[in-house]
Amino acid sequence: MGLTKAAVYGIYGLVYLAKQPKDKVVSLSEVASMFNLPKKFLAKIFQMLAKVGFVTSYRGIRGGFRLNRLKDEITLKEIIECIQGPIHFLFLENRFARPNAVAYKLKEICQEIEGFCHNKLESVTLIDLV
Image 1 (spheres, helix red, strand yellow):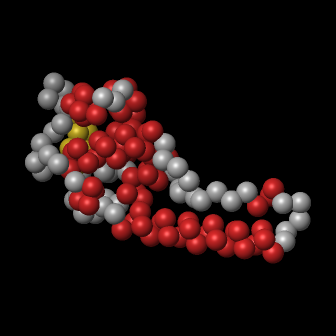
Image 2 (spheres, rainbow, N blue to C red):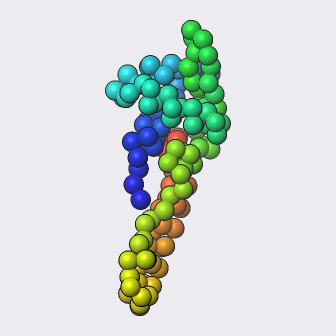
Image 3 (spheres, helix red, strand yellow):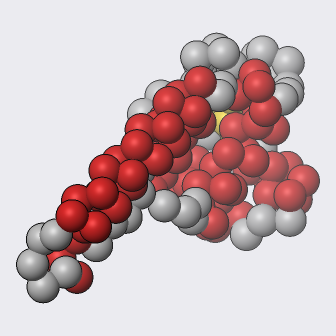
């Protein structure tokens, strides 16, 4: 398991929006320049975030984005999975020629780690990062 650049940029962007007054619309340029991120890449990420309802998109000269949900309702796990898909702790079971006790134990440990990661990421919200 690892975070992609897109997931990290999405987290940065949402945290920035969470720091703004509730109804303030923030331009993509402002977010991109705040963290020195590529604007086009950030635009694609924000489109994903808008699709699932984390942000609302506004067009026009005063266009941009604002947070659409409460800061304490958006979890880190939701953000990551929105951008990079389901979170899994990778265990390559098929690398063993035949299943054995060590392989079963390793798989069990990896499943425990994955469960811990899911629980931790579900417990962290945007408000915790602000």
